Length: 394
Image 1 (cartoon, one colour):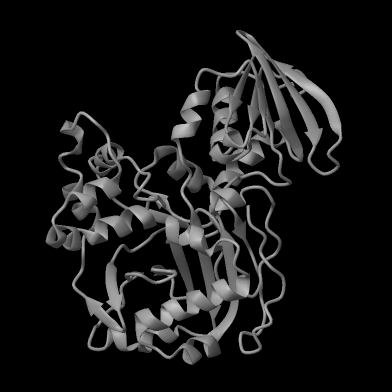
Image 2: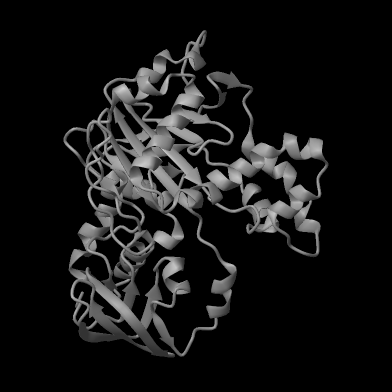
């Protein structure tokens, strides 16, 4: 590989960019990967902290289903790939409600959409239902806003019908050493071909030839451009929509950008002194505590444990419009809302939860927060509510 004169230029060192470079390498085709940030891996963002018993996943955490390439990479990582239990429950004011299969309810809600001549949003689908049916299928809306991180007023009902009909994941896994270690296998093979802190400002192209104008992300100063035979663009949708990279001429797919949306997500990971939730009223009379918890109408309506490991760590998740609603609030307020959500779900006093809290990690993945890199996460005494630092969004 001669990174000084690559045939293929790849923009973005996330999972897609690294995988593309690795596939080209398998066919003996030189490539150069250009990444604007100071680290690779994109939305895979693992933090290791000596005080934490698990790797902290600020971004992607689970390997869903039987994705052959991901599982193959994971097997190359030192450490274990664990199968995550998949028992879900619904909670309301400390009581376990009857389980609701959100995926099946969504399939029912959009079952007739493929036969309709015109696409419509899921909000339109719900608006056309009777009140009783809308209430019964309400968990489908929560599934779309949570799992798909989508606004039901924007998401395509036809697309949801196709996605829900594709079949569920047989299993989901977690890399014990962290998701970043999985992509690290690719990065280790490609390190000489990956250039960080390099921002692409313009792509000038014609068939069989491309030139990239570059600048240093750190200083903002222009650097020497690069030329290649082709270019693979793997940057986030928001970067393309913002026009951060100029194209000359504009590619034929440019108009399609206006019809695409990136889902909004806020993620919270909390370290506690003990697994206080095992004594919650919600589990009274139950032999086993489920691994995933859901609730209606809370700031953080979904939580999960680190099962199969028995560690005092919980992860909270909110997607769609509810995640956008938290954007711009200070981190202490967002942490407060996460703790209040747990209190409401589990039927425990908030003070009990706060007394056990050791450290929080919050990360904002809303699309409009896509630019800056995060700082180190907050960690301080929850009793004093002086959260050291503030996780910047991206």
